[in-house]
Length: 485
Figure 1 (cartoon, rainbow, N blue to C red):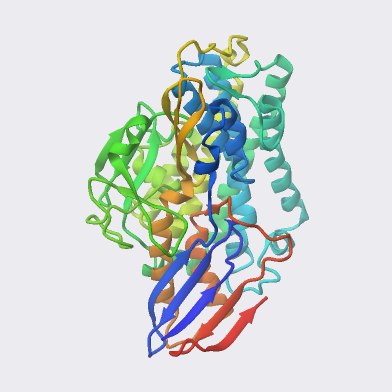
Figure 2: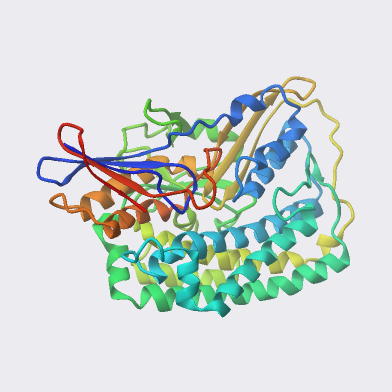
């Protein structure tokens, strides 16, 4: 049996390795996605004061620190049994909407865009953000950078810094919003909405009008039937900041709907000896291994999953794009993994519209932004929709507020089993008779890149030192070929 190893995989956050095992005829017998880096945040947070957690956990990731900081801040509300004032909740959601907008730009244009705009078969030297800018032009490239910066400028106004913002307190936020800040945010939000329209038009022109790309989206190699998870508001519309967790089955029928605090009644975590990452699954269905379908407890929590789990979007332009996507793809639920990129852009539009809505809400200027905690801290669960999936923090403290136990189910962790399944399907659909090329391996990587995986906490190498290495072994595990760039 031959083995193909992609190590490290590229254009993701963190570190991972793909091993593909070929049978004697050169076809794919199996494939594994391994996370060889140790996370340790849950353990080394024990013994710290719980109020430190929004700052500590924001260091888990350099791409989505705001998601961890927000989930942690909401967990502090629960631990201290305090309800923030309405203005504080809206300020939090305003920051979070701006963060979601900036993060989706990062993934679509910088991490995944090169696969479609430059092309999956292009040279690795061109298949990156610089190759993308060379293809679309300097003007569009600068527009992408400028609008991504707007999201971070809003984060800075509210949270003090563009990255690793410090604002979250149990019972509220650290400061109210000024009129001058509100005016600046509103002006930027109007431009963000226009950029959302531009991005969706670009996707239509580059991807949807290209028959090869559309065929690839619909192909069996990129189609996986699973359960889907996402947070919904009181009208079952997508919500990033707050609501109930809704799960639908592979036929689109509601399977579960519960408050985040009840997550342990619905989610369990499986471990394998060959990876440091956990495999969450639906407890009432059970762990059946790395397989999809209704009989498996494997679920997905991605942008596409959120749209599948909801009844629509809460803002008008995003709702129109939502309806267009499902009409084009044949109705709900959609199981085509690469359609996640389209769903991500629908969410980008929602994030821009929600930023504008909140910036125009008069209550956003209310100075009452914190309820001081008075109860003894105990235990709490906080949850938000991170860009990569449902993010849950769970803390247990002693009576002094010192952490005794921490459990984190991060966005990508939800999707670990589906990522493994998707990679195997893509490899089996693309590699035949032992014929392996750089372009085929990149198409295998596209199966995981759609998830926008974020294996932060993993060890990182310096910029320019992330080579893609593929090692091919014969039946005796002897290296017969090594490819790198």
